[in-house]
Length: 463
Image (cartoon, rainbow, N blue to C red; front, side, top):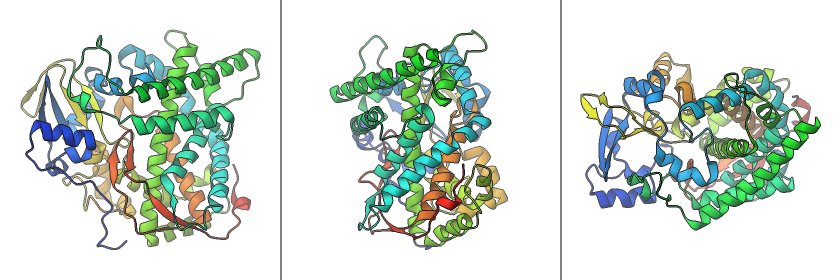
């Protein structure tokens, strides 16, 4: 990559702004409401109406919040308030014993052996995406975020419910999720105010309506699967595995309504985050043709594309890890302390908002050499190992680490492999601007040109 090129990064606000200015910037884009000093600071304090917010980069404090005492730092009600109409009490927003029970039921579905089982479904979705994109490859440019969203959604439907995105129910759900993404940012100006739980949360009517439509469709899909399980005709996929797993502590399994909450989470997390990660990775490869050529050479050297052979793609994996460092799909996480704390000699009152930011940690000037540059080779260096231990958490960390992290890494490397195997990817002169909504997306999309490599890849693909 040219030394003059720095992957796009949001501009920062001035260090000193009024509360009103901060709120206006926050409403526009979370990134632009943050000052440049956060890329170097260990901790920063923000005074907001009715409570304080602490932005934490100190690795010891991050470790304390996520690993050493996670039960004292539950997910903030702010996040639940922003997403409650869609996710209910799903595992992404729940806390305490409810969350622990949910994870005990969900986690077995994502163990290593199960990932091998879902690999053929991922391959099938990737093959369909390649064929779909071949029909568009003669166009001057393709908006790749939309294509990545469809591909990621297809993978979720195939691995969770054994149906392709062309299925009528899947197609309706995907279209409704596109509406939802346009109406619901991760946090709004209402996030500045701690609203008691008994007060109705502020959400747009369009967001509520779309959430209700999605949940109605998911309920139908979930109820149908419960009936298949009772009849002994259910396919052996992730949904069946989760629905038939009992909590080893209580002996209970998910009720239909509980399962709808979890399915909403799987689709939101698995579809939104994967699409974000894949789209930004393809953009970086389009800019850096030398790196793209190295990925293509590594892929071409495989005798076949199989689950076992993914381990023979270390450079492709490093490309994906580096893209996740620069563009973590979930840019910030918010926790709330339930007991008094002392952080860096400051007293932290109960109910304060503790913000942990993969976006800032993974570009932090004290951890990373040339933090804003795209350099997949950094992952071979000894210094990066220390940085990764302290300041790399695209899937969170500790007990609340994303249960689908292994799934996401396999999916990401596989999709990069299949797309680079099929296409040469180039930029079209439009630099995307990252913004923080549900995930890190480009304000006006990511536009790229795809040219077929003219290679028949079907013979080299094996599940």
